[in-house]
Amino acid sequence: MADECTDVANLEQMAVCIRFVDVKSIVNEDFIGFVPLDKVDAASISTALLKIMEDCKLDLRNLRGQGYDGASVMSGLKSGVSVSARIKELQPRAEYHHCRAHALNLVISSSCRSVDMIRTVFDDVNQLTWFLGGSPKRTAILKRHLPDAKQVDYLVGDTDDEKVESNINIANAFSKSLLPKLCETRWSARVDTLSVILAKYKAVLASLEDVRKESTATEARTKATAFIHMMEKSTFVVAIVIAHHILSYTKPLSLALQNAKCDVFKAFTDAQTCKKVVAAQRSDEVFNRCIWMKAAAIAESIDIELGKPRTVGRMRHRANAAFSDDSVHGYYRVNAYFPFVDHCLNELNERFPEQTRPSFLAFQLLPCRLQNITEEEIADIQVRYEEDMPDSPGFVRELERWKMFCSGLQNRDKDTGNQSLETAIQLADPNYYPNVHAVFRVLLTMPVGSVPCERSFSAMRRLKHWSRSTMTEDRLSGLASLFIHRDITVCREKIMRKFDETKKRL
Image (cartoon, rainbow, N blue to C red; front, side, top):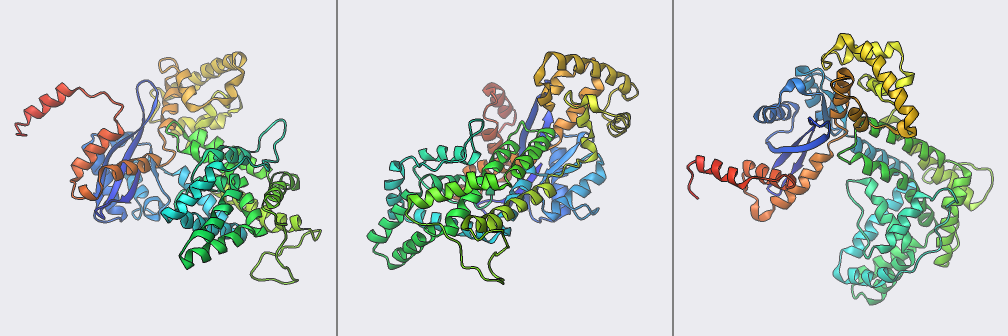
């Protein structure tokens, strides 16, 4: 896994991490070092990757997956013009996996930009958060109002069987004492900002009123007045409720994909579940219960009446799709809510397809899927994983034993349907089921994304700052390794003996 970032010295740094399964069949994702890049073309990056693998004595023959972002220099399929294609020429078994967290981020960003009303509300919220947080005086005014905000009474839409995800996020936002700025890169994290605004809508408005009254700068008073008018507009109220409601269902998936224990099977199943949940939101009943009632309650709390923009027969620059009645809620349902849900579903289907890649056919070996496996699938798995199996000719006979074992397991354990790869590999004894165990090890080794590299960038910013901008690369990688792997116990005596062998003077 690899990703690039520019450090404080304006140098391009590539973080390299590896994912592996240890002797106890436990998944690990470890940082191995930073590599400076003079060029960011495919040849330079692939050469740097191969060199650091050689320096760490990692055998290329054991490489089973590559995890990068979706940049063309990393992910292109044409031979010789991308990093993934160059490395796959050397090791054909090393398949490229687009970072799932990055793919979800692209889903959300594309969907939010595709509907005018949703795109506008994010632009407005971005300016609002930077305005309130861009001055110590305005931040002090905001702190004066947010902690004392009362519990809102528009957490509507919950049923006896289930709580609406967006209501959970709003309820959790009551403890916030500041309004977080919109994250520039992680769109799924933007739901946190929307949650605080919805939880403390009147408090934010009151803060803007105080800024308008107390500020001595004409520009600040003018902007505060504009933001007050913006938050009192019906289009803003309805759009922010719509965006918050749908994004609340993508946030759990984003957090799951960033987990180091997440494997390709869990990422696949969680994404399919998210698609089903989002698809279930596309109904008149959900809009009326979870969107319109909440927007109407917010409007009532700030003494405004929800209305719709002026519409005429033909409009080019504003949404005006036809709907059955001339109601206000019908306008927002057809022109904002349904299009946003449809765009989210289309993007999810495109970036998280139900048709899995051939290497994922081995999912059928999981206890929860094993009873439906076909002879053709068994033959395909045997051919694809022949090099990884210690006893490939005996795979079919071994599979019969594995089926019998899993059948008895299902009779004893009713939760086997929720089996994960991490649990399945613990069940597959490497002495009795060596081939099945080997296939599960390969599947667990495949990277879900490049999130560990992003975490290492956070460590780099703590270690290499403006007062350490001339730090050498070896020192940076060494300090980063010590910081990231600080849970590992180090024998000081061994370190001192090794240093003493170098004959260097302190």
